[in-house]
Image (tube, rainbow over all chains, first blue to last red; front, side, top):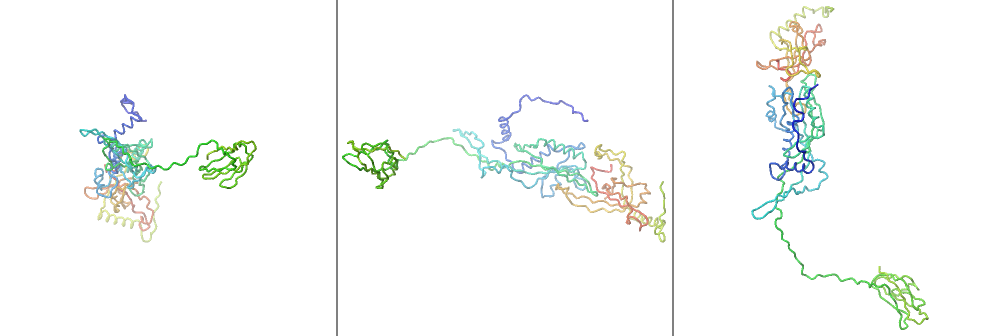
Length: 345
Length: 170
């Protein structure tokens, strides 16, 4: 059983708690814009590839038999000479690569991440920061706008070619440690980029009558994004405001007011001087509810000279109707009256 | 106890003395005229340093018996230009070596060639390529390896090239 390595278990004791939540976000923002302008740094295909190469060299490359396993520092190319340039220091006399070694293949296809599906169309520019300016006379500000980063997935294959199971184990242990929490991260141009281990493939050559060696291929997906600084916009913000009012001097033509019906609570038809019939025009719509009569034995209702009925309790009046009420007087000698209550509709 | 049974087939027109004569003439041609020479590095399976779990040799852990030079009829296959798996790394893989060696030669040298032994073959004065035996040709009962059906007289041994990280003759 291996013994624990010598040395203190915890060499330093942190005196401050690590930042969390908003302070941590601000810390990451500072990291993104470090050593540059207020804007984030560009992140394009070549930056992501370089970042992944560094990731392999810093975190996956391991030591076997006291020697560092060499990493072929190319991804994919159609130029044959580049292989020699990158591998001359671990070639044999036939100029063949001598195992063990690690090689990285980038699949040429780069695809949009699914997150892009739920996005605002047209890739508009977004406010990023307001930077104060001073031109010697006036304080002002510049508005920095950037487009939304485009999320992309890039697939890489890291292949270990070796001829000892010990090296296969070591590589696997390194990968398992790195991706025990599903994702590993690489800081590329100040951006945190997650990397996921997708799968493992074994292509070991075990033919009976040929050179035997292990080829272990690990597939990785880098969840990156593209930001092109050529698309950034910087323009001056407002630094002086003038408020102006303009009044229209032309006469305002308002539409004629609609005649409002009189707010009468009741309508009384009074038959003076021996009259037995009265007419009245209505310019609104209402219901007349019979309330009372004075010295009237019965009455007949006509609307637009159309007979409606005798002694009705309810008369429905439309706008423009002519209401006529004929009465048969009673015998009390009082002035006859027919009283309705009107209800506007 | 091993019994020796005389081979009497083809006895009317062929016998042991004819067989030895033919082998002798063949060896004269192969060793005297052609003189293809290989160096056999027989693995010392008792002293080799291996991994406890996988039995793989550790760095420079291969131990071999004193090298022995022997003559054989040599055929080296053409190299193949191919990629290492699907890693897109090109390489020209050297071809296998096929050695046809007289059984009498092995008996005279008192050696045997086993699966996994290494063989060195000098391509030029200052370059030797090493091969690992992948087929030791031990079974010689087929008609091709017998002298017209009389008796086996040679072995065909196939070896695949190895890199210096596996074997360097040291």
